[in-house]
Image 1 (cartoon, rainbow, N blue to C red):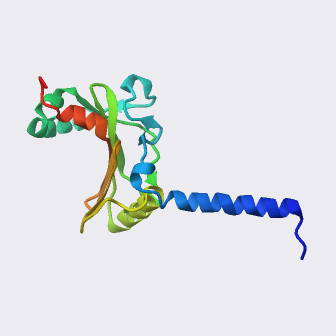
Image 2 (cartoon, rainbow, N blue to C red; image 1 turned 90 degrees about the horizontal axis):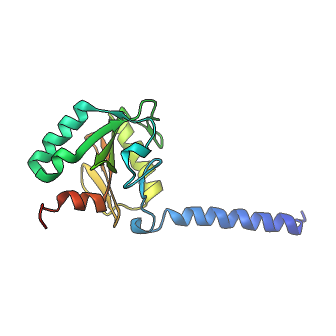
Image 3 (cartoon, one colour; image 1 turned 30 degrees about the horizontal axis):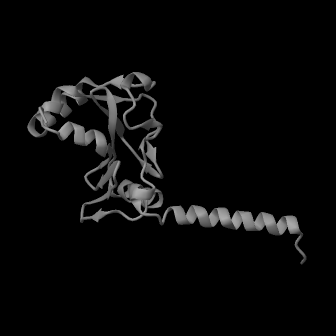
Length: 175
């Protein structure tokens, strides 16, 4: 069978694209880490994100947690959901997603899920998207970069956070 020059060039381009896509998953996390979650970039003001619904219960719970760990940040955090949000990551099914804002700037998201099967599906999606984790423990894996940290726990939690904004939250007042 004889291939035309056009066909050979097309096959070469397809192979190059496939190789490039495969290699992207092999990059260190810091070279491919996300700059936000879904369509929201870290630091985006809450007023610029469409479709958010304030969660009074989520905000109260997060503020209570932060009172014990980051006192100065507690009053400045708020939690939102997005009705109609796609409750999937890869093949994994989620029960809900919360979006976190500090001083009205987007700094993180937490997705909740149930079951070992969903954990395995989310783990597969994370390996495919982010490559090898920087930490693997019996019940969780983490990807730690300069701008983003990701945690996937068998306890039913997937979270992504902005390292820069988290650092601002943890800095003691007056420094």
